[in-house]
Length: 112
Image (cartoon, helix red, strand yellow):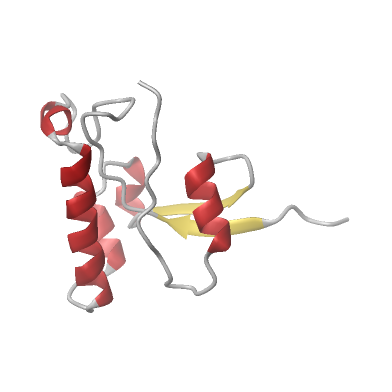
């Protein structure tokens, strides 16, 4: 029996004023999220990515401190998942990655 193709991915989610749900474990009332622009979230992600790639910080530590997703408590680890289980842009990026530590910023637009 053939098994479904799966990947294991980790991520750092930075919510912003355009996010569908404007609350997170670190901002339960959504005060910061509601005032964070999409551009500011992207800038923050780019800075974090540069620090990770430069070896200044570990991905897991950055995710634990900065990610708005509950996966932060697992260093951003989402575990294994198959196609159709994540939002399409993220899924496509996760399945396209080749190296164990290869990553980029993926923007997922959400409906309000």
